[in-house]
Amino acid sequence: MRGKYTTTQVLVFRKLGIQTIEYLTEQELIAGLKSGDEACFQYLVSTYQDLVYNTAYGLLQQAQDAEDVAQEVFLQVFRSVHSFKSEAKLSTWLYKITTSRALDLIRSKKSKKRFAIIQRLWGGDEEAALDIPDQYHPGVALEQKEDAGKLWRAISKLPDNQRVAFSLHKLEGLSYQEVSEIMGNSLPAVESLMHRARLNLKKILEKEIS
Image 1 (cartoon, rainbow, N blue to C red):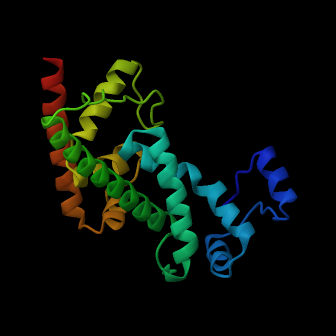
Image 2 (image 1 turned 90 degrees about the horizontal axis):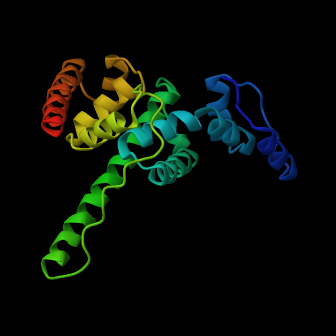
Image 3 (image 1 turned 90 degrees about the vertical axis):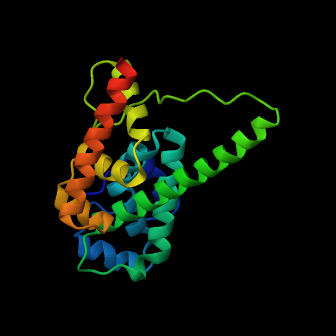
């Protein structure tokens, strides 16, 4: 795995006295993280930041939320790396932590939204308009931003487990086997989730278009 540092990052690391690393095997990276090597942690972030951010964004559809989750994910990795089992892939572990953190945030927002609805029943501000993201996930290959917005809104209406399976498979390009490992479900269960997700998306989109 090769680290992806910008010129600015390299300069900052040098000022902080952190040595940058150009290449590490996964085993070397994990060993360095477990020993508390700061350079290995910076290498982890530079190598996997796109994976973590894109996964979070695919589920949350809000840039700031995705950035917040990404920070939490790397902090959790730093704090709990000693519990990582070497027989698992590091990317699989990162996907698991990211989806878990993103779903926690989604549930927290749903809870706050329910509370806000109760408050509005007794008077108060009108519900905020839906914030459609201006930047679209690289896994979505649609020419029209309007169509992309419709797709994002439809994905956000899926049940959590269907949303995770769909995002990992269709947006991140993971195989069913990889999705099953990340979600802790059997392969047939993932196939069923994807089938139901497609049917639900079709219904939602048809309803919006009609």
